[in-house]
Image (cartoon, rainbow, N blue to C red; front, side):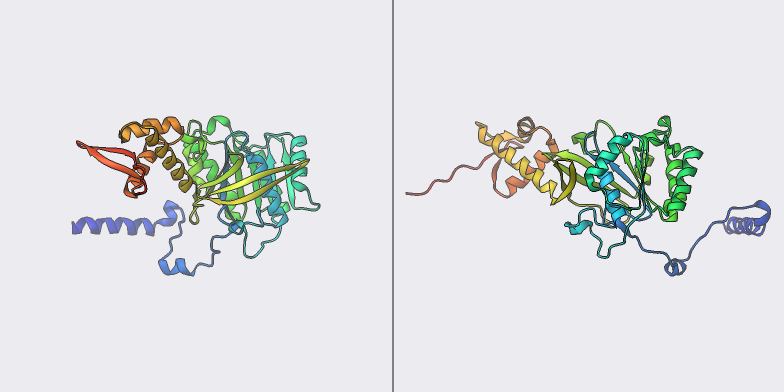
Length: 355
């Protein structure tokens, strides 16, 4: 064994000694002390929690979820140097960073519609906000990529929006892990590592349970490479904002409720605040269980409760019903008994006053 180790060491020494001849690539390795001494900025954000500086961000949502409008709202607010929701402290920086030069590349809607939407959001003069609409820019082709890079350098762009991501590369490549990894790495090397943040608007994958949209269409390498994933969707007349992923910290724990206000020809996004969806879902499941047991003529086992609860409230899962049965029985909100080895559940008997 000692001889093997010695031979291994001599091989390494010979390779290192002949580095110039073998043209080994240069790699940088830091000691822990050297790493701590590096003069690099800490993680920072254009929008706290949602949009990290020098990052790749995916904004996704099902059709008609206003994801393009929301992307335009974000672009406008950053170009203004203002919070995306000034009255909501979670998304507001302690110290304003000033106007962020922004390029919005739109390949799905025509210029008439983009003008109308932007005007409705509220145009202000002399903003460092630029629009490329239906120009056929492809980020996997040299011509399009070089144009973007040159424009970024000339206008000092720090934030780019691609809408939609699927129109800006070869459609057949979207499911290719190799091609998507190459493209995402190229964006990171050419833009984000040089101080430019990129947000692309994309479609969720199809057939997801509940329609939450927490997976992106195409190769899994797309989602794997992003630093933040924001999901917007409609629910009960409002918009819901969630964040399945944030690389540089803890993602949003709760849903954020938004309202899209339309006043004549004016549009405005309003933040209604945080919303604990898990607590609300638990409340819904509990109420459904109480209803099911109240209508039952005899005790029910867990599987029976699940069947009737899912009929009463489509969208709840077997696991949610069973978890809430356990919670309710342990808190004595419902009665639990045994029939042989099977747990049975029923509503608590009504108590009557003693006369």
